[in-house]
Length: 74
Image (cartoon, rainbow, N blue to C red; front, side):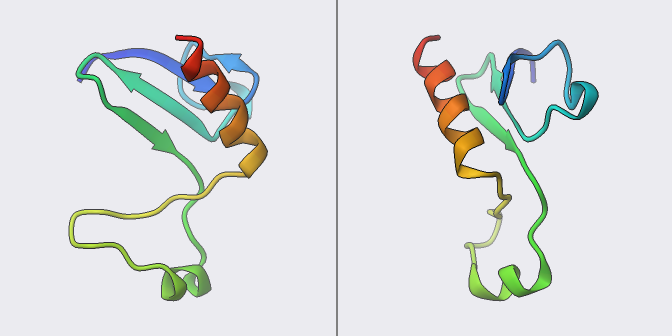
């Protein structure tokens, strides 16, 4: 996988978790977006279930909104 862009709450990052700038969205050359977020707490895992091969991470809604606005400008 070739990463073309890493976007955090405050803009484009040169690398993952640059000085604590996580969570992040990773845009790859293959046209997929990968979301880096916080692992779910055990109680959250019991509330959310995903099909085999899928899973959940979480991030603050404000961070997601900032990242989404940056992806739209791409």
